[in-house]
Image (cartoon, rainbow over the protein chains, first blue to last red):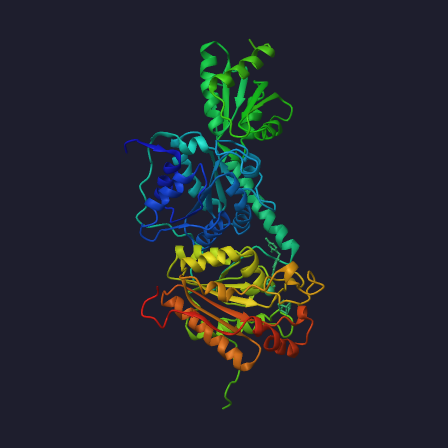
Amino acid sequence: MAKILMDGNSAIGEAAIRAGCQCYFGYPITPQNELTEYMATHLSRRKRCAFVQAESEVAAINMVYGASVAGARAMTSSSSPGISLKQEGISYLAACELPAVIVNMQRGGPGLGSISAAQSDYFQATRGGGHGDYRTIVLGPSSVQELADMTMRAFDLADKYKIPVIILGDGVLGQMKEPVEFSREAPAVLPIREGSLRGAKGRPSRIIKTFTSNPSELEEINWSLFRRYTLIKKEETTCESFMIEDARLVVVAFGIAARIAKGAIKNLRSEGLKVGLFRPVTLWPFPDEPLKEMSKTIKQYLVFEMNMGQMVEDVQLALAGRGEVAFYGRPGGVIPNPSEVARVISRLYYQKGLK
Amino acid sequence: MMKPVYIRPKSLKRTPFHYCPGCGHSVAHRLVCEVIDEMGLQELIIGIPPPGCSVFAYNYFDVDMAESAHGRGAAVATGIKRAYPESVVFTYQGDGDLAGIGTAETIHAANRGENITTIFINNAVYGMTGGQMAPTTLRGMKTTTTPYGRDHILEGHPIKMSEILSMLDGVAYIERVAVNSPANIRKAKKAIAKAFQVQLDGRGFSMVEILSPCPTNWKMTPIKSWQWIDEEMTGIFPLGVYRDVTEKTSAD
Ligand SMILES: Cc1ncc(C[n+]2csc(CCOP(=O)(O)OP(=O)(O)O)c2C)c(N)n1
Ligand code: SF4
Ligand SMILES: [Mg+2]
């Protein structure tokens, strides 16, 4: 298939349809409206598919819950304030072991914040986000092509592990246009998950529920969730390394920040600085083993995020003192350019006498 | 041979109800199950119970059921019905659930004309959480959060959901009934059957509001609570059909 030029939000929509997404429920919020509009145009009239512009993000996530109960591949998208509203629903999806795909095109916060790109929802996304002990798989794309690929992966992972999957993008990724290629055609027959509720025909009736008056039953449910999470960590942890073989300093960044850092690193390499990039692709599960391994040879790290320092805590946990961790962050929707990040990297590089 | 006067509906499990003696939920459950049996819906219906005294409804209804978050029943039902239009979907919701926290979901599902049925149990209190004020609590009524009686200046007025929803064009059928006498119980059953028929015919949103005794939180005997519905509740919440588009040739 030839590459086509597409904005990130629309690319998610197209990828979702090709992944067999049957239902999309959304509520307008910048910077992700192109996705809702893409689904209105391309999904709403497809055979057996459904698009609803919901009355709120709360309603949208609960519609996703309903569609997932009925066995359909279902998705919702929003940006930071709207994602906060979805958290109760995500907690229920996690508790009921229901697959769903949730896109967060992050913007600056807290509060109504700004409509510019940010990465301030990392904690919320990677710690479950709502109430209760649970996790969601969190994917951190850094290009339009990855948005497309990860959307398909998200649907597969959600079904495979019966878990909500978050695509943690940002306003830049959603809005920018890049050439993209789709690896699949839309399925001729939409997938319907086993064990869903479609009426108790020829089988005993089924219940999907979270509530119990028995704490030990709930404890076992929590344990079983965490056994699954351990398996996900083992099987699905993904990361990218760039120019780390001989690096003396490694920048750790995810999503669009990793893209900016990569530009900085390329420039610094041409000046002879031995710097590399480590990019967690799955933000949960966080790739702590590769970092631990790296710390045998590389001792200096710089975490760069478009927030006040969130993923940096996961880096510190992974390194557990085996490396020195510095942090540079710009919160609130400020988007630094590669030369700004290059200055920060080279200053640290010389300060630490790595030359 | 003796004529049976009582048989358990097939779609009602054998599990004994946990409801208080005289609670309207038990009667409403049985009525819905009788209708499910009589209309042959057991194998295609999906129910959405709420947090509330009826949170364990799935232990009684022998049909597919998925628990909703508090108030979100109409949105969950929307998702199910849109994903699988061949199903028959009903929500079962209390007044706190439908008329408080879930007002937006309810109004918008109704306004979109979602082809679903809502069984709305109005007992004028938050039963499950211990008898606090509900949006439907009557003026002057004492609850644990209106210990001096609901004062409309401070606490507002009882909300009339059947009246509000009946103004929406997506709504096909709304009736308010009560389960406080054999005659009213028979009428309630007819209304539930009609609501499901409206859904089967694809006419849009249908709801049956059931005035339902909560003797425990009303601090009354079951008999007194039946009388109280007639004497007090129906004055604020008059029984009757609030909207019915089935008489017209096409739903507008
Ligand atoms: C988000 C949220 N808030 C509060 C509650 C606690 N809660 C459970 S049921 C309920 C109200 C129940 O009242 P109603 O809907 O009238 O049902 P009833 O018990 O009277 O049948 C509340 C407030 C909850 N489960 N979830
Ligand atoms: S508290 Fe009221 S609504 Fe709840 S079970 Fe008892 S009587 Fe029924
Ligand atoms: Mg109530």
